[in-house]
Image 1: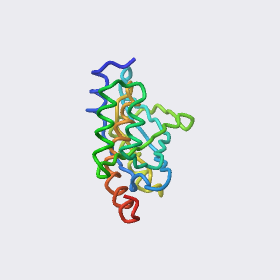
Image 2: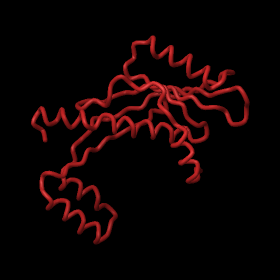
Image 3: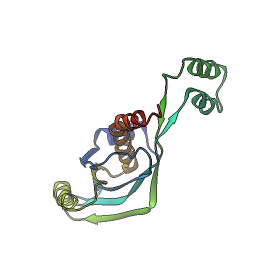
Image 4: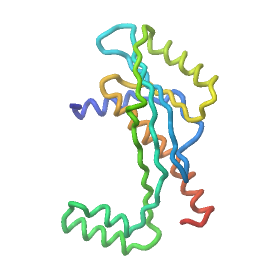
Length: 174
């Protein structure tokens, strides 16, 4: 089980080396293909490459009324008051909801005898020469590698949100 310092360490030591060329699609599922590279903690001069897919479901607009229903499951009276306030605050308040799935069935691992920098350079060249606009290369930590993927997912949400909202506005949906 992870400790709080494991989360902080993973968040601070994760960086996206190659960002996907596209963000999260506004009206469909987006499938990012990742390669996550991490140094092995118990072996010098070796790194682990994890490859897989993260699916981002179509973002949704959550209205104040729907948010109050989602929020109240298992909460008390203070939550009810807050939900009532959100619902009465008017149509200006909208919340985006993004859903992600890590498809572990697509996950593969490989240990290579290279330095972290050599592996990142090699994979960066491969991704740059490929034709996958949804490929990502992530440098992270081995033990808390899933936290590294969550950080990548959050960065993709932040990068995509403005464009998703703009597209909804152009289509008159908000």
